[in-house]
Length: 104
Image (cartoon, rainbow, N blue to C red; front, side, top):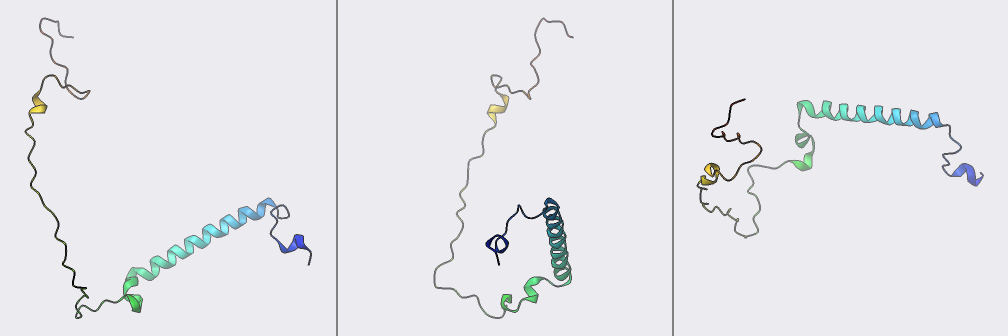
């Protein structure tokens, strides 16, 4: 067998071949995803696989380390005075009315 035929050479293949391969790959991916949905619809995969079962009657192994408790610290509630400060305006604030001007 010649070395040119034993290795993959994209120059020897017509361009249509790559389009067909892309279509076949998409079809295979759709079939695989559909099969996984079909298999997992009625019974979860956790129940199908024998090594994934957890026996609820057996206690969970604890290596003696204490279980960490979450730290909950009270925080001060902001006063909200910044909302009523007239010096702080954003693009979402109403423009303040002008005194002595004519309304539009």
